Image (cartoon, rainbow, N blue to C red):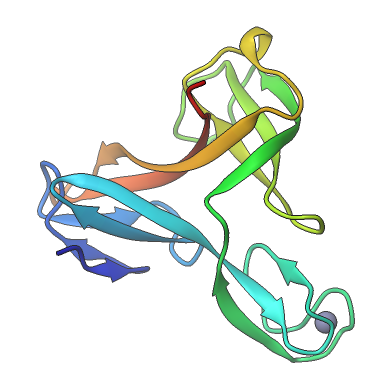
Length: 153
Ligand SMILES: [Zn+2]
């Protein structure tokens, strides 16, 4: 059985613990050595709007009225661009593809698009969330990050 937490979880693939690279953005589950999970967003209980990353105040109606919610793990590629030079905080080597992924009518999240080059992508194609190890820290823990990858046709 897999345990699901958003801060850290025992039983990394090679490390002793699994730690999200940026805590609070996504939840990780480990099952049979495989990572899965979902992005953590907020849903407004007053206007029903969903957004990411999570926050207490609804950006639409400005009320403190949100609850944490698991976002869909599948979406469609709305737009994308090639990033030729990575910022220091980005762990994937440049060039890489940054994409806008539409998870619902109102919700678009920006994410690294993995496994394909920009010239092989198409607007509107189906993509799904993947949680992958990106590096190991000095204490031997697996640091994981989220990506969206095109769904194999
Ligand atoms: Zn609202």
